[in-house]
Image (cartoon, rainbow, N blue to C red; front, side, top):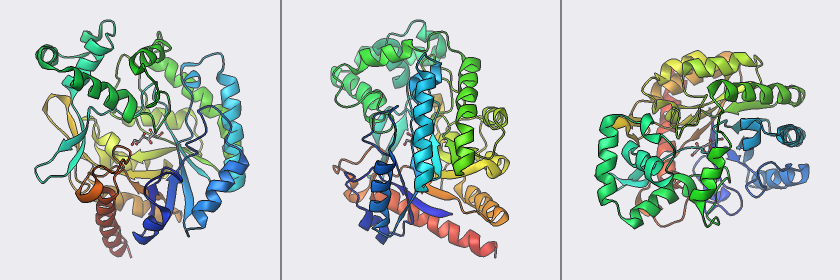
Length: 393
Ligand code: DNO
């Protein structure tokens, strides 16, 4: 696999020269300064690409070219927005950047409730606590009939939490769920927004009446429109699974498990309609056997995220060490290395999230995207890849 790294552009505190030293080969990034829905010009793409190449690296994957909400809920502006998307893809194709990761999650991208869950050894990782999330849903968003979506045990615990939670904790929860984890990945809500909750509720309203079937049809519509340009420029679109892989906040989610992935690959049965195999996101779904999914979808996987989780009682989950947990990354690596051998085509892989450890704290890295924690995981995975490649000789 090609060793890639998610880098957030020229303002990222982690420099390309450091990445070069730790064995990174390719960069995963986006034009983070272009607002969602606007065209990525060839000029801007080439500027960043040349910058990356001047460090002896290559721009391997775009993550993400964000899909605007109106495309997902099927709003009046969707055709214009898809037109812009197509122009951006064409420009990427002309520049030779041909792997594009995106997602089709309504309103909210990945969800965590704690960004620095302490481990016994002093490091920390990201965490999802269902009771806190339900509290946010029921008491902060005050979503109509939200209680229905949680078990009586969870509701009981939410009541207890409501009696003790402080204002500071409430603010932190809002900041974690809809600001800090979202701003840098999709831009719906950013640190600049003064009233994130009100804004978020407006976004949720856009999906009133949109169920799983409708969201699927909107995804099919989008994919059918963009396939010709992907075909022409040999661009692989790689959808990122929903994280966590389940419906949330009354919103449908359609990339959660084997059936969903099967549906989307068949709905538009074209090699350019591919998958980002995010082992970590999939592993947070109790229904998912990660190596089994890797085996099944290896030929349509165009980009791999390596991370793992452990599911805890109550529907909570924690991001595990990369060689532990439900993702079974050793098996996953073996499956994709075999696929590479079979197809003769290399696959970009990035370490997805790392713990915060040693000198990572206080550096202002985006949540999950520590330097030392990810470097540590990369070294482990590099070892696994070397062993597997040796086995396959
Ligand atoms: C979080 C990421 C996601 C991912 C997008 C891809 O760390 O895994 O935000 O980048 O969903 O579109």
